[in-house]
Length: 376
Image 1: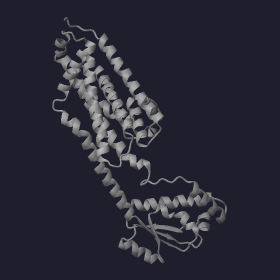
Image 2: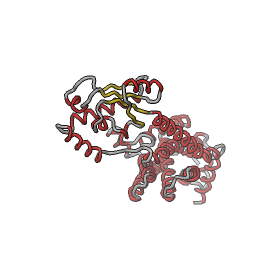
Image 3: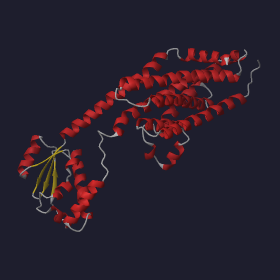
């Protein structure tokens, strides 16, 4: 154990030279950057929603019109008394889109496929106009599908409105978790790169033949390797704890179980070591090692659900992602943020650690069996 601690200190001393402030500051920088970007996006969305006003002129003032253009789906919504007033309001810029319904019985005219009953106007072919057209097309499809008469349609439409799924972005748990998930995905990529940097001394010392001099002492090859691995683990764990601290310090609304976040940092540190050792095992030199590390990390984070939910990926990719420890880390983090069950979070972390330990043990076995051509 004493020899392992000697190598551990040796690893930290070599790795942290010039890297300490990066390790300390990087999570803080990511936290601030993502928070600023998310705030700008939210502000843009809010400004867009505030300017998205719809004016409507209709000869039919029945409930059918509300089915065609539900007020909750078109933002600011008001009616005018004439087509002329509608166009003047549009020219002034008070509305983004104007809707003209040239029908006294829009239900009947839609059922009979009468042309020219609905017209959508705007100053340009903007996305707002396209959105209103899609809302109206949905309403037309409902009229065509719901019942054989107006009363039956209104009854079925009310039932549809009652049972339909409503997603409110501003008040959803997903919006609360979104920027933390993005932040964690970015941090995860850098975390793996730093993990690779921590393991790199194993390869560098082999290239410079420093390991020969170390192994000529009473330190065994297993102790030498374990010392470097534990040194990497200590630094990565410190990095993970720093990230957790920034979540709580820079985000007052972040009210998540601290114990689970610390366990997540512990598991992610083991995953970082495993990924670095896998790359090390297939690298012949430092150039190849760093090249493979940079090439492998980004796809691994993407396939592991760091940015794009795995559910959106092809089925074959979903199956492959199950063998990646990052898949389980990301799953656990999302469940922690969304306050999932403790059992499911624990199982995800256990799966990530188990896969990583298998990879680490495999590397140690291969190292032990590596033919040593040196004579001590």
